Length: 638
Image (tube, rainbow, N blue to C red):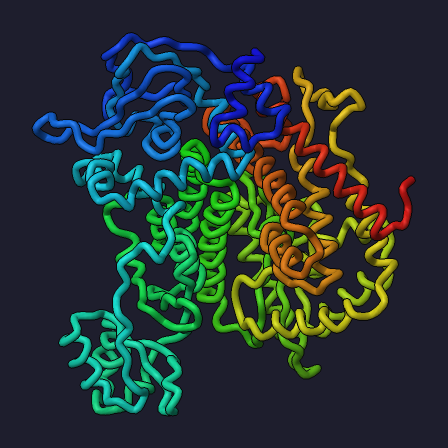
């Protein structure tokens, strides 16, 4: 045991793990010996059971080309690992052929333990993904990693590259521009000459600010179909909004942004300058047919409630597959949220088509976990409607419309699989559909008349996120809250702190996991374990008037303000999303394999020793931050 532990302390990235975790890992290592010239793994054929760490001897790794020549030959010696990239990014199959060049001794770590470490420790995980990224810059290596076109393995690898690849690595289309006064027919001629389906339009000022764009579809719908005069200025038909993204963002972020903003084109900027643009069709090629983004596209094309219901029922399988590949839980959350939002938008648009245009501007907003973009597979509806204030004679008419609208939306969402909220926090409840002035009064009441009950009941109402309608109404609400939160609100924050301290992490004095009985199992509640982090971060965000709703985004904003240090931020982020990953995977298995409704209970005995040790470390992190709340907000250590 001591020999293994001492050795692991010298091996990257194991030397980045906490000492207690490293000891548990060392205990679980198996020693394996390979004779000289033994073929250990076959390229893209051998299923990897785990990770090999070379102790003595040497691995030779390479690709076979079509003539059975060895290509991209590399050697792994003492302290080198083999199998991490294969486990994470190649469907657990060996990327390369591996031969023992000498009598070789390795320590073997089972893939379940390896994947648990990747989920728990971001530095550990990124060591392997960064190595993969560096190797993919080698043209010869990249050539052999990509199997024959059309194979399942290619779809798998390409899909996973979406999560680790940045936009700066993509080939961008050049931005082509013309002024808004340019005649439509001339723009069409320019598009044909440049062989592009998108032309960006600038204002007439000297600054050349981009104000919209024109596509083939724009010309078809607004000119040809409408019999419009092609000599008119192109500014009369342009599409909006202009949506941009940084070259430093990941490919998956670009695709999700396109779905959320309903745009097919993204401008790409670097240090304030546009350096090119991306099209959704280019990103969603046939190579990515297995990716969740094609699935989201199919949701957008669904025509009726039964089809949307079928799509939502497919989400657990997609979640399970993504987590199994090592895709980070926060990314999986974003995928679930985008699918959920897409379904809700389809339902909302259908309700408006049924009832006719709304009689007033409004916003349909989502609250709670949906508002935070942190939905799991055990989810109910949390939503509300804000409509603009109208003159007295129109109030009843407006209210009647939106209550009917809310009922249609809520009933259809329930039918699809988003169950009614047991607490009634949904637009179908008349208490949650009101004018903007009424909503402002609600928030003032929650801020001024706080007590333990309202603190817990209405906390999720501060996780409100725009989903559909006139965004300026949401902006006005945020501006109002910004002013109100600058007033003395000690009582409000005191009760928010009390609420965040109600649940203590299930860690006993002897560092065991405290459980309770459900059926035949001894379990703890994953949702309640995560709640203190959500509550803590929400409280600090409101204190500093940060109106991002996602826990991770709030934490990053608080770090920038100096509220949390880099290490505190990382501890909380890793703790929160590790728990989220465990929770999502457990719920997916319940739905797919056990055929039972998902819940938030977890039996610690179902976890490996590494996972149990990781959980205990997370519970300690949560307890430390609860202590910080006590000191900072309640002025009490009792």
